[in-house]
Image (cartoon, rainbow, N blue to C red; front, side, top):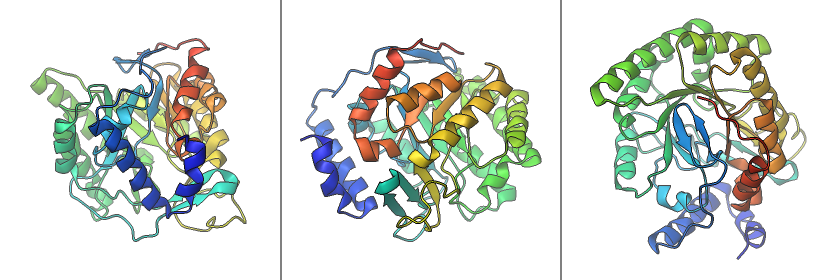
Length: 343
């Protein structure tokens, strides 16, 4: 059955319940060892020293506990990012906490890093058959003081290091109190310094270098983006993911659920996320690769992210509205263009 026929049925359900049912249906296909819906290999790229079979990935947030890797691998992603994971399990914010805004092709979420903890995620990765490029997105527990945030990131980095292709440091979710303070100058310097030092020690210990990426918010000024870029360069961070969800309500004003607290994603974020990619690209001048995410609802949006300076793209909310066919549409759009190879 096509996703266009299934979507009205799913949209009658609570958004979080529909999310769970969709993942369980995908898991059934993986358990039956059904072949991939699409092969992963087409116009790939080398980014952060890694070989990506194609440039369209899954953004963090859909599979927080790495519980559905084999199912998601069947959809044709070039890479999958799981998490955000925290050192200890936490339930996240009270329900309801996930809201669709169909008229704007948008979603608001205030999930709050709900996950079963890093040890559970590690066990899931170890038992999965998936052998593709895997990003692990790490964060801090809600009750860890912001002054001790680095401790939580370091715990997660150590535990996932040998299993991840790359690790993403999430300092931009709007749903963990004060987390975005870590994007500010001194706090960012302290955090990146600690993570980079640990990364180098782990690389020596395990004989394998695992790149570090940082995920940033769209709700920062161009001046602050310039300062963030300088710190990423100074600390020799391997990649930057732009962007997370936004606190802005531009594009959804007056619509049902628009006043719900949380981060807005989907079509209203498209232009701003692409603008952030372009601004970062000018500051970074090709020295750090960018993964573009935010409001990719069709192949044209993916191509715009690449044209703005991204080397890879990631999807999430677009899948809610367009289904798995969006992955192939974006792959085709990027394959028709010039493949960007950046280290």
